[in-house]
Figure 1 (spheres, helix red, strand yellow):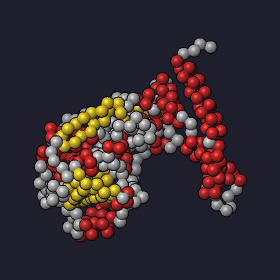
Figure 2 (tube, rainbow, N blue to C red):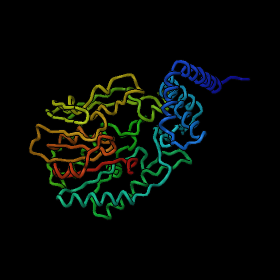
Figure 3 (cartoon, helix red, strand yellow):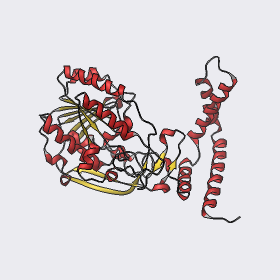
Figure 4 (cartoon, rainbow, N blue to C red):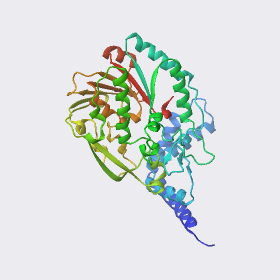
Length: 395
């Protein structure tokens, strides 16, 4: 048998899986046994048959192996290298919704393989808008872009993605209901920007520079149509220090393919050159911070580590996703109060938007510590409610 690099890597990968799997079973036998017992107890009804019991035990065993797998990250790296040698464009995950595709331009992305029914989403949005109207509060919907461009998908042959289709259908329906919205996908194109340059190569999120750009578009809309008076200097890149750290970030898609399949991303730390002063509260996390931009709106503990798989550098901005965050701008005390309903794309928007208002309340309804939104709005009476989601979170 003639050996080549494909066969060598294949044999190494199989041997690695066998050795690490056996080592995991021996070293973590106690943990695996515990997980099997928990799986047996938690996943069975009283009338479960023998097949149900075996399935539950198997699921518990699998969970125990996954939890304590020896050299798991090295295995992911080796697997990714193997897929790269085979020139595979689709990397399958245990959860199909996390399957990763390599676009023709080299960027990694998740993808949605079916159309969504937006009727109920539109109904909920209209009802919410009616509630706000009764309190005299306007609603602005902001459509964040998806990593796969609607104008240039870069999808490999035979692969379809429906995220932009779903977003288009949702926007069409809420426009018909006279709900104001701005589509950042369209504005990227109108500004002549390269869509994919606004995203990380190994992560599904957009970059901090894209967050600053998005702030400029939202601020311009607030100035023109909602009576705000946001200083243009706040979105001028010349008024910020931008330091780029090379090859320091492995994103959500890169964590599933390893660092050899598509490399690492650069990461920008953007801080204002002008004076800032904020007060940040995250009551559910017992967090209270005061100080300048970098001390309050950035979490530098998430940055600079070489532990690519167990840290998420993207959340250096805003610290991550929480049910409710309150930000008070102690310099702009005469500005407006904004409520932002968000997903993780707002991590890199929040620090810049906070500079433009007196109070920024941020709500993430996906979190376990989510709040009663209607009660909160009634109590705090914001000047405007902004909803911003990327198409993948239209559910």
